[in-house]
Image 1 (cartoon, rainbow, N blue to C red):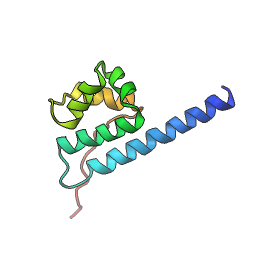
Image 2: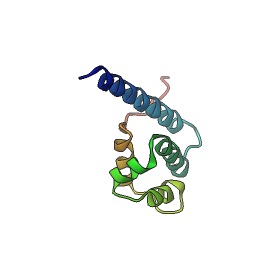
Image 3: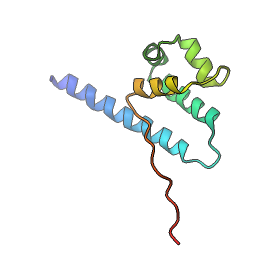
Image 4: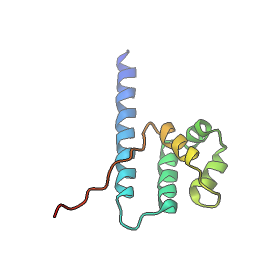
Length: 100
């Protein structure tokens, strides 16, 4: 791997980590819902390059914007496609309950 390729990979990993942290923080907000999550995905997709993300999902830029913007139904397969295109993943874990 050339120094350029190494630096590019490191930058991509850092960007993916920042996007994952942003979305994770949003998911832990008290009054967070599907629409707000979709808009967060739209923002991150726009910053990453909506064209690339849409192509990875098999959609046009406009179709992806409509889904993530709330004017079209949002499907789980598209959510998973978006996160994959962004280089991140969703994870399910148990809710931390207070010990009493």
